[in-house]
Length: 151
Image (cartoon, rainbow, N blue to C red):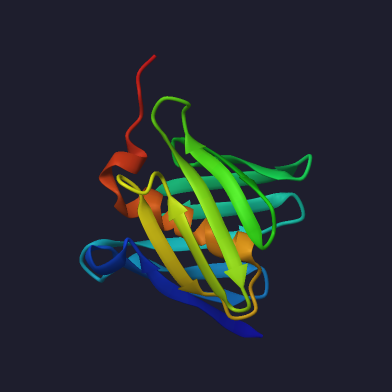
């Protein structure tokens, strides 16, 4: 059965998100036709893998948390309908907070001043899937989200 996740990241000056869920596959696009990136994810027994644009996504379930990487950024998510987590490194990173109410997911990536709010219609998808899609879209389209620091 096919379902949709659709909504907005970043409010009026942000980006559209639209993905189709077909079984364990999530395919869609963050942003528009010109300034946007394709999202291709697959939910596996151990987590989620796939790509956003040309960057890989590999996240595994470990002790009740989803841990892994979206491109070059580390990601940790906890929860199902109330999701919290962190993307990036301790000094340059973004807090993740989201709450599912029925088929709607609202949340924030980063601080209230420098972060981006998101609002998604989930269909029948759980909140953690919508949160992951929002994080992947943020990584894909927000220039400061995919910067790597040298060590």
